[in-house]
Image (cartoon, rainbow, N blue to C red):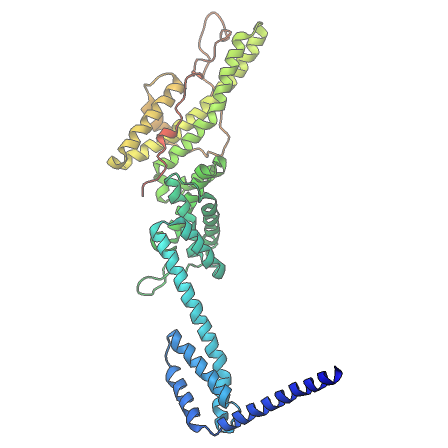
Length: 408
């Protein structure tokens, strides 16, 4: 067995040596192939100036074939030296061009999705682009806006992703990250974004800010988190400063936030009626008045916000006539709840909205009405709430006045 293996090994070695000799002989024979050398080199020189990818790939293969066949020949030493440098450069060019073509296809996919408001494709293609170009803030803009577009149609599926990308885009834009957009003549602009979401940087920031507020409020039900963002927009100079639906949303927040207080007032009144001692009734009377005063504060803030919404809807003319009418009904219901009357509402609203809008994140100040004048007693009769409000009256939900999609 050892003898067989020994001779088998020698046989393999002999074949290898013979093969090397054949290769060397073949290479040596090629050195005399002047016509073949000239043909390959001529083919390369014809392909090299062409910039299309197939020609560049063929030029690369031709150069490699030349080196493989004739690289050891002294007659073509100069060409071999050139190819030693040219081949890596051409390989890089081919790789870069393939990458650009792949990115071009990806950008077209993204652009088509933006044009069609295809949220799935915008997010999927956008994520692929960002994996290769993480600094491309323009791609973030549509990704941050598409969730808002879909939320208008009551589709909140994309709220999480869109909110994340809107916040990412805002951070980049507010840090003055360059967008590198150009006009049709190739001149640099101050624009950011893509296609219908390409606009001046300040406008993009405002649109993304609104998208963030809206998606927090309606998409994530994070109303307190959305309030400071809405307030920021009311203090700026963008179109949102006079957007009626923005103020109606703030008004709705106050109405919703006051509902638990109204329930507490009703429960306290019921408890007071059931009280058996004057001392207990008087104590509950104090608690009722404090809750009513806080309820008054919330209702007045709601009136303020809805009043501004109505004023700005009126400024927009016939296009917002239905919204204006809806808002006015909400104001009447809130005013009736607060003051138990309807006269004087227009003047009260005008006077209130002439002042700066209260910051909705600030603490609501209770508003206590004066005690009624009486000659028989200095206290409110047991079992009776302060006359300034009817806490048990059903309140408007405020949401009927909020047509959620702002007009552009």
